Length: 406
Image: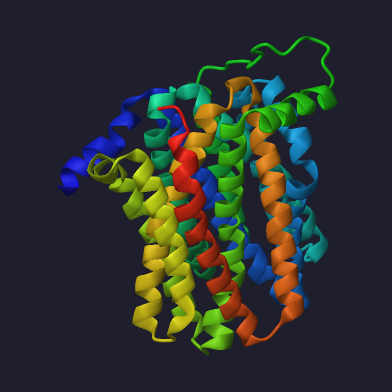
């Protein structure tokens, strides 16, 4: 059964262009994890203040909150492949420059902050452009399978990147890790040159202003009920990622008093669950059907989140966070449905609006939870968000997906 699932899942990697995108996404997530671990550690060492890491996270999210509209229009105006390649080379150059400054004993946090902000901008560009590029490489029928396979690359890189960053920093030093990360970013970008460049000018009149292009995308959301509902569903679902990243260390280490090592093990379960879900997605889709799989995954995801803080026992937390990661893969199906319904020429603008909205809602939620303080607010956040998501899946999403054309 496992061999069959693997053959179904990775058959698409025989396509040279898709394989180039898969390897690029794997490299990108490895780079993100390695750089985050090293910069967070160095900022703590340089400043001795945990608020430096909070500032680092804020600078990472800032481009998504402020510049997504511009990035979306750029993505729809120019070759998406070229944009991703440029972003990767830019990211690699910035990381290499920072490594050089540190090697020359220029030990100032401002350089790490500047790199974080610039890399955040680069990450925004290639995240929107790479997702839109995927829509160019596969047809609508193959979008779910392709998105799921790309998700495996993301989860694998996200899982291994911090581990590699920590181990290599211990063995070789932080500067060496940044140099290796810079090389990986460049390799991933250059590897994408195997993908044919396709300028996506489908129906956009020449001379159209950026504002007019965004008005057209907003008009799509306003007039197309299917797209609007899927957009809302994706936004509600994907707020979970930054929210859970914020809540997990508070619950495990502050509320439950677990060690950093225990937190790391629990956090790793999310990536392992996501990889497992990606491998067995085809079998699940054949067994339950496409739309029931998405709805069931969203409902289970919400219920497991709500149940997660009910016990401080480590086996319970490990098992449930594994299920959280597994069920989170249903979001890939939901996003695939949205991308199927959005015209290729508007993918960048719609996805950038999604990034902006998700970043703003997640930032507001995190700030409110920070102001609320207290151990109870963390538990209430888990239970409240989880039940909201489960009810949304049962009451609204099940009905909405029935209206989506097959």
